[in-house]
Image (cartoon, rainbow, N blue to C red):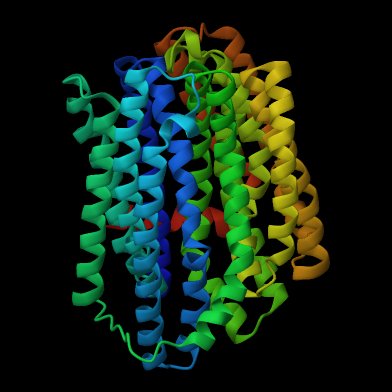
Length: 504
């Protein structure tokens, strides 16, 4: 049953991301034009500030799977119930703290966001902040129940909920935008869907999974052990928050909302790009924890690490190579000529982040082995350096400069230091991993050469020709990868489902 759940989880993950990308491609340009650059920049600026409150989780969300696996191996149902109760109490307290801290941010919005906003923008910013804070508080409670669902490997249910939420968001938001409710409508719909998802997860855990919660006999010894484990996860969360939010905050204070909007378009593309990778690796989190808890076999972990990484790379290589070839024309048509710099910003974000994206299963392996301290401390030093580097780069190169600091930190941290750590300390054979990735080079090179020729032949400044060019490139890429890049097991992932369909 687990294997079916894994396959269903991966398939639905990509179905969700496909809907996310398709709706984004259709919805985002409409949204950008309805909001205008200034209000979209304001929305991105406020979001970059409120997202720091997500750090209140202190890394506890990532700890549930590790301790659940420990009790699961021992068939300790009472221990699992106590763990559930402890997590519910912890995240309920965090949600309350989030509301209090959010209230402080709302009252001090002018001090935090700077003097570059008009009175009308500041008023709207406070409304956006308040709604986002309530939504984030709900998401803290939801994370308890969604973690329980994932721990039971109920990926099908989890992905269906995500799929519906992703699908409904633009359909509910767009009419409100047309009616003139602006960015307030966007965050209100998002908050409503978060609350609905919370209720659905609670119902599923109680009715379907028969989840039990024990609130008495609070295990402070376990809490102390969890805190030691999650302390460095928290540091990692701080790093991610700095890397992906500080640029917009700095641009908002130093350059204004227009610069934030331009950066935000590239950031949205980067967010979609990153989600394509985590869709695969996230469903393997329970399996990694159980593998480490039972036998901790580095050869098997390396094989899984490489197998998942190859699947991720095949998908990401299509996107990033296509973006390099057709991205400039795509940005002009999709977002508008005023977002021209978003293409270069996207290059500085997407290219370096590809390395950690095809290796993100390694993060789960590190946490399962309780070896994530080095990564967290190293990344924190680099992220802090990124802040100062970004300030210097913004003064020198403007909006594009903000992305350069992030690119440098990703290359140094993820590309060099983490691969050394995987190989020397964690026990993952990254040399074997990269040999498996390099095997794709001939097939991708052929596709890229074809793509460059297509881009020269077609007038990709028009939507129809751009769509035809991209479609042809995807076709050539798929054929090239299938016949020259995939191994037998990867081909079976495509052939066997098709054979079943044709047989039926």
